[in-house]
Length: 352
Image 1 (cartoon, rainbow, N blue to C red):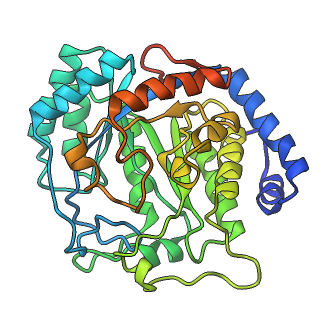
Image 2 (image 1 turned 30 degrees about the vertical axis):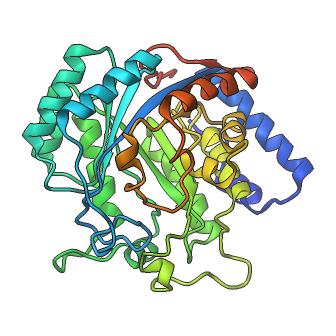
Image 3 (image 1 turned 120 degrees about the vertical axis):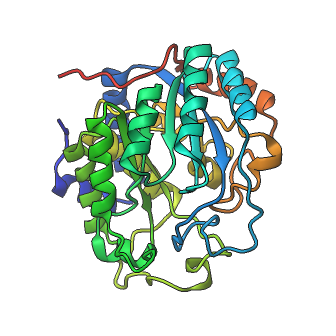
């Protein structure tokens, strides 16, 4: 049950008083400590392919971007990454890709089964909207969690940034339906939004945050909209910023506010301090996210030769840094803010 109402959410979203915002950071951190503890759970991310059938206006790997060198990672490489995650002590491996029909359901089910048989890791999937049969097959193979961000619950704004495919209208309702389906199949369900999309109002963002609680999400990822020049929106095609001070900024401060407000709305959820935050503030973005309500970090285990090709937005943090080097630094940075690296899979705890 949330600890904050819509009026309070809007008040904090508009707030730019640094001294007063310290109250929000402290409250979110206290709720995080009380509900999910001081452990920071690490999820090893493997970007298994950058083919995508969608033409989302903000995403660098959208189907219309002909300058992208496309790839799919083979099964043995994915298994090696899972072993690496286990070796580092991570509790989860996350397989992420574009919405790619070329990733066949049976093939991925075999990969999932191997990971579950050969490691103690939880398996999280983030593969876009897939068929019910595939979702059921992957769950039966052992997948534990499914992530699908709805980006905005405003249907007009959603349509403006998500062109239809084959003439079929594309709405947030499609994603809400799929999230219900994965919960019914027994997955932990995760979603989230972008912050600062042109055309996103404070009212709309407040509705999104409240919706997290109504959906009873297990995982919630929020991060700033970062312009990619090789996208329709990067070329000025799509929704325009709102006038009169109603446009939500996609800046670092707003991202922290949404992390904190998400924690107050969904006290038990797993909330990552995202790579996008670190991309805005490489020196301390992740740490500040962790101090303001987050309890998860997702280190990138994608092999370097593929990592730079998965450019959903430009200048992603840690593209060049070696996995070993990043891991050793990450542990020290987590301990440096008085937190500890989590043990086990880090599933959501339903406290009642």
